[in-house]
Structure formats: C-alpha cells, structure tokens
Length: 386
Image (cartoon, rainbow, N blue to C red; front, side):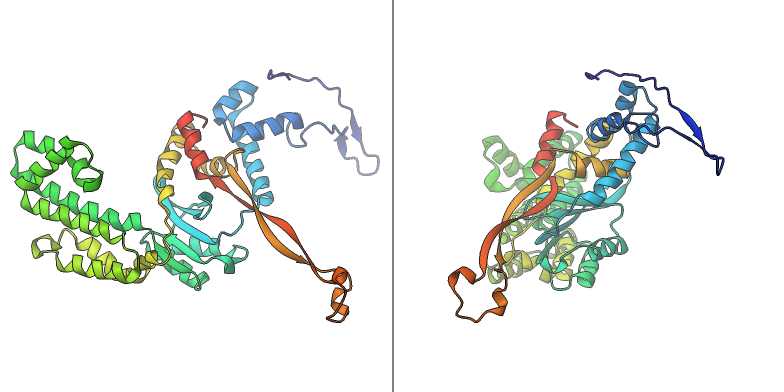
C-alpha cells in the first residue's frame, strides 16, 4: 500500500463437511488460492519481475526469492497463451551465445522485432517451431546465416520461401581472412611493431572510404607498404565489399568471378573459408541482390542479453527469454490497416444487377503484429532500465 509492505491479519473460519468429513476454509476472494498473499501483490510481483531482479523484489516485499521465481514462471506461462506472435512476411533466423550455448533467435525482419528465442539451434528444434507457426504460407523470405540446420529446416517446413544469406555474415569472412594474414605477419616484426600492428588492426578492417582521419590513412599506407601481401589482401577485401554495391544479381556475379580470378595462390589459403562459403551457398548468397533483406540488427542482441544476464546474476534461459519478449513497453504492437470485404445480408442470393445499396461493401480492419522492438530494447539497456 503506497509502495510500502503491508501485512494483513485475517480471521478465517474453518468448516467441516458432515457428509464426507473433509475440512475447508472460508473463501477469501482477494487472496491468491495457492499462496498467503493478496491477488494485488501477485499482480505487482508479476509486472515487477519482468523489469527487476528476483532478489531485489524478494528483499523489497519480504518473501523468499523462490516464491518470486515461481510467480514469475506462472505469469510467463499465462502470457504465452495470451500473446499472439503473428507470422511475419520476412522471417529472420539467427543465434546468440547465451548461458554457454548458442540459442536460436526468430525475428520479424520487416518490423525489426524479436519474435522468439529458442533453447537450441539444431534442426529438430527449428523444425518444431516453424511447424507450429500459423499462416506459414505468408512467409516469403527467410534471412539467415550459413548454418546448415537452418536451411534444412526451412526447406522442409516452408519450401516455398526464398532463403537469403545475411550479407554481414558473408563479408565477415573477408575480414577474417585479412585478420589471418595480419597475424601471420606478426612473426616477422619486432615486439614494438607487433604491438603497434595490433593497435592498428581497426584500420585494416575499416573500409577505405570510411577512413576520414588522415593519420589512419597514413597508418594503412605504412603497413601495406611494409607487407605487400597484406596490402594485396586489403585490396581484395575492399573489392569483395564492393560486390554488395552491385545493382543487379548479374552484375554481382560478374564482380565475384573477377574477384575470384584476382586471388593469388599465396592468398588462396587465407580466403579459403570465404571461397568455400560462396561455392556451397551460392544461390542463397546471390538471392540478396534480388531480395536485399538482412538480420544485421540482431547482431547487437548478444551484447543486450549478456548485459541482462549480468544484472540478473545468472537468470535462467526462460527468465531471460521472458524479460525480452514480454516486458511492457518493449513489445511492438503495430496497427496495420487491411482492406476487408463485407457482404450485405442476402447479397449472394440476389442477381448481379442488384441496387448499389445491396452490393458488397468494404471497411478498414486492423491487424496487430507483436514482437519485442529491437531499438527499444537497445535504448532500455543503454539507459539502464533493465
């Protein structure tokens, strides 16, 4: 009451049934049937448990932390049944490293929101989830990284959907190739130069057009002049990034073939993972140039979840998932207009040339799309709201 803990003493009558000899207590409509607390407190703990740590709530209320956790779990189960996560047109499948394991993240790419987080990222888990989606024919595109179980699951459950490999996972392999070459060259420099090369690695990983600082341009020139092979690899990295600026899929494919022919034998080993990925995932990678969707915004989700987990001092997977998906204010409820035909009574029974007032009419209806808005989650983390 008034944000202060209040204890209530109740004289509760106990009865005994004359027929079955069972005893029971007088009904208290304002009390929780399973715990010696008011329904009002249960409701408060439910909402607070999505925003605060279980320990802080237990200390504030004066109950055991296990009680808070159990109330939270029951509340999440209730929310699961009530919340309608609509199937998106553009589905995203990615993963985050959480509690020592990779977890699968399902996103609405078009509306930039997190729909669900699955405990595992194996094929069976993803197939099970996709199979339960409503209106699955609605899915047109699926953005993902190059993880074979994702592809197999999508081809099995929604074969009509076009798979698009997230471009950031592809260009990341080009940067990783450059990193391998940089590390290989560390052995031929002094300890001082090795430390400097480590500090200057960001220059090598930055696009040339983004090097606005004159000092950074000098640093790049010094290292590429000192190590010609590193300089050649940097140019190959830049050329590969340029492929994603192509306007058509034919142009992109031509640029890739030119790039591949320019890779010398001495650098082929370093760029091997990238070339292998382009060969094994060619169709899905080049689908980006006809359907340019990406899961890029979910890359920050790793940082977000780690922060929540640190603050919560070891939340369970279920707790972390619920805090992200169900916290009030983080969920996106988008009102989307949809034109729906409304038939006039007995309209179908009348001839074609019926009066205008008897013909089918139309009205605007609204479709709700639910999901944890990603930009809101990031903002909440930066402001310390978690």
